[in-house]
Length: 554
Ligand code: G3I
Ligand code: 9MR
Image: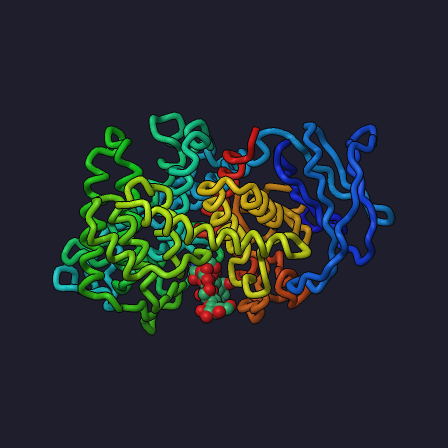
């Protein structure tokens, strides 16, 4: 169903839980009525008035809202409006997004570096191992007294970052936060899941087994000599569009930097806390993570302003960032929660800015969210109030934007950046944080609305997750998906989404159909700027799918 035309009535292609808010968007300029009909006998189960049509700048189109939240009976339905083709059929029923959360987590397994994927777990996507990374060269930019340029280290495992085969510490930062936060916020959901990875069925939830695959790689990215952390493990140039085992270029660790050290410190401090109850399965690991976090923090105290500067001979992803207050704030927050030392809380207060929707380069709000989650460990009521209020302000602003937009989404033109689908989901994560703190139903509904956007209630009528929905991306920029000889893409991956900058236009043989922010998407494997996949984009998909599943009332 990948290429069929999108209908004028758009909705979440996976449907809804019975108690969820339920919206459809009708592309129309005229007011009118809508009805919801049962699949099968066509019986009308609900009628209502469309909202007054309004424009939405990112799509340059007018739309009206059909609100059918009153429909709670499980079943299969369509939305109908006179003069338009009916919507796709959609289900209402329990466990609406449990399978989505599983698939989104399973995608990380499919991107494991240094591991064969066996058919028992990977099915049609079974493949040989690639990139063992047991002999990785120290790039001249990363040389130190104990590890001179050209010497060799071992840093196996981890996930491929995205559609490429390199491994980047900074992008692993927000990714690990989001996955471990999903565990901390929704343990009951994840405790019961079996996503079919080699470790499924052991004493550790699959979410934490899969996360360990990347954490154990990250630990090797720290120089034992000085505690500094390499920015990335990479080829000098991107691999061709081949399977992992056919990609044999030499691998390097490149330049230590402040962002890598602090993201690493934050992740290891958080992971030390999260894995502590699993000491029996990971003996010695929480303590090792704590030491690693403290050493990286100390490195950054001594080198507080070392941006990543891409060496001339390195041409892979940069993940360059020159502002470190947010990384300091996040790492300080996690280290405070791990150690209880007041100095870290002072450091958080010194560096923290008002929370913003997070991204790989903007991680300050991750510290706010961790402190809010563990606010019982804050020293006093004033601190607890301040942290909760900071998150609530951002959630309230996003909910107001969602409420006031014609497409009922907080996304505005400037949110359509490289990875806009994840921007929508990170907005949803903030809304869910706000909901957890205040139980304001409008925050949960707005988060649902953001997920609806990603799953098809958008001007393209596409569910941006491979294999999840009726019209999904078929040609993501993802080397295994392109090279494996299987017709469909590897499932469970979030496409980056519309990005009007179109930085890949020169590499694409076909033009984008539109330059409008919300329409600037190309389902072609050339399109790394709008149709790549990435671990930091899939992580909020895991978080939001599980969170809405867990938080929507039964
Ligand atoms: O910093 C400017 C900001 O000031 C401005 O407001 C904004 C407006 O669009 O642009 C900002 O810079 C953008 C930057 O991301 C930060 O969001 C750049 O235009 C944009 O080109 C850049 O895109 C990054 C892209 O790599 C190219 O470097 C993406 O965020 C990042 O997700 C992506 O990551 C790649 C890795 O490099 C390699 N692996 C695949 C991965 C996913 O495509
Ligand atoms: O495949 C690469 C993708 O993972 C990156 O996100 C993207 C931007 O850095 O670059 C892709 O590689 C392309 C390169 O930048 C330009 N020549 C074509 C490469 C493959 O499409």
